[in-house]
Image (tube, rainbow, N blue to C red; front, side, top):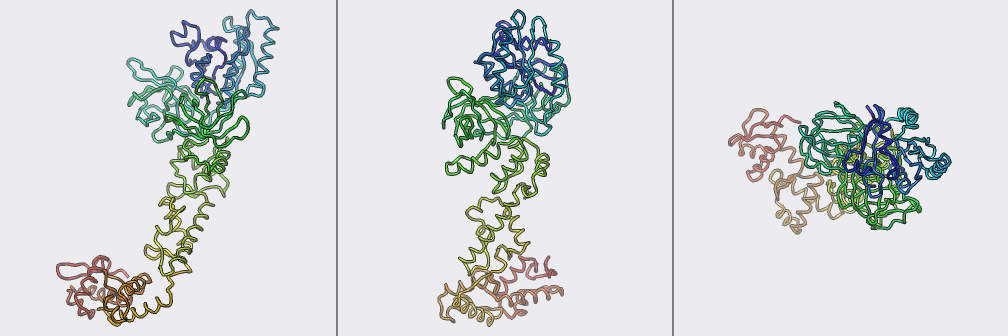
Length: 629
C-alpha cells in the first residue's frame, strides 16, 4: 500500500488537477462547484498505483489555508507551472510554504505545452530555475507535459514512479497521529474521517481519542486506496469509519491514542520569515496553521537571531494539539499574507519572563535540532531540574514509553538520566541536589545546634521545595546509604554532627537527669524539678525536651519523663515476665517496677501500642512484638 504522499503545488488554473487525472485516471475535483467552475476549491485525492497517494491542493490565494492543510503531510512536491503563463504569485507562495513545512523532495512540471512555442517554453523554464534557486527544488528534474493530449505524461509517470519508490520510508517511531482533513457521513456506515497518518499505526477496533478534548472513539472499519485494511501505518492515506462521540469530529482536529498528546494554547517555536515579509513585532496578531488546523494568536518574541529568524512563543486563542518537530505556517491576521513558518520546539513551555530571556533562548537553540535524542537531552537539561516525568516527555515528543527508553540509551553516558520512579533526572543534577541537601543540613545545624536532627520539611525549603516527593525520598535514601546523613526516627542529621548544647544548657540537663535517676520509675514532674533546682518551670520543660531529643530520656504524655536506662530496663522486666506466661495486672506491674499506678498505667498503655503487651480484660499478656529483640 502507498506510504508516500505527493502534493501538487502551483498557481490557479495551471493544470494541477488535470495532471493528477492524467497520471492516475482519477478526477481529484470531488465537489460539484469544482467541476462547474473548473477550479479546485478544497483538497482532492488520488492514488498512483500502490506507490503514492496524491493530494491535489487549491491554487487560489484565498484558499491558502486549504493548501496548507494538504501540504502539511507531503513527502514529495509536484510543482506545476503552465507553459502559457509562467511563474505566478501562487507558484512562489506554494513553493515557500512547502519549504516552510520541511518538504525535501520534488519534481517540476511545465504543463499545457501543446500549442506553445519551444522558445517561449525555454523562457518559462529559465524563469522556473531562477525561482527555485536556493530551495529544495534547485536540483529537481523538470518535465514538459500536456495533460489533455497526453504528451510527455507516460515518460513522466514512469520516472516519477521510479523516484517515489526510491524515497526513504517515514520513521516508524511515534504514537498514532492523524490530522483530520475531511469528516462526512455515509448512509449505512456512519461517520468517516480521512487524513494522512503522520506517525504510528492504527488497527481495526482500536480505541482512539479526538483532540482537543480527549473524546472517546472506536475504529469500526479502516480503508485505504478504496480497499479495507486491518492495519495502517505512517505515510498512508486513511479513511476511518468511527463510532462513539462522533459529534466532536471536525476538520482540524487530531485522532490519536488516548492520553498520548498534549493540548496547549502556548507553543514555543522557531520561525523563519519569507524574504519579502515584514519584521515581526512583539504581540503581533497572527494566524497559526499547523496540520489541518488554523488558530488565531499573538507572538511573544524571545530572541531575534537575524533579519529572518526568531524564537518566540505563540499565544493562541484556542487549544491545539502538537509535538516537538511539527512544522507550521505563520500568516498575517489581516490582510492575509504568508509571513513564514517553522518548527515547534515545545508544545507547552512555561510562562515567559523577561528576566529568564537568556536561558530560555539558549534552551530554544538547543531544542532547534533534527536529532530527537539531542532534543530530549536538551529538554532534560533545561526543564528537568526538578525531574521530568516520563508521561510528559512522551507527550512532548509524541513517542511511546518504550521508544523514549530506547532513545535515552543513545545519549552519551554522562547525559543519560537516572530513573527515579516516574521521573527522569540528569546524573549531574542528582549530584548537585545531593550537595544542596547536605549543605542545607549543615546550615540547619549551624542555626539550631541544640536540635538532634531535622525533618523532611526542614530540609526541602526554598528551591528544594519544588522537588516531588519521589525525588526527595530518593535523595534521602541515597545520602543515608552513602553515609552522608544519619536518619534517627523521622529526623536527619549530618554524619559528623549532632546536637550541641551550650555550657549552661549542658549543666542544667545533667542536673535534671540526676533527679530523674533518683526518682527511679516514679520520676518527679517538671514542676517538682523546678522547685528543687530553683529554676523557672519553662526552663526545666525545655531541658526535658532537649534530653528527649538527645535520646537520654523518654517521654510519655505531657509531663512524664523517664531516663532511657530506666525505661529500657522496665520494658525488659515486663517482657521477661509476660513471656513466662504470667497474666500481669496493673498492681503486679507496679510492684515489679517499684512504682505506682500513676506511672505504670501510661507505661503499659505505651507497651500495648507498640505490641509488646496486649490487654485482655484487666490483665496484660504477651503481644505480637513481645518476642522481638
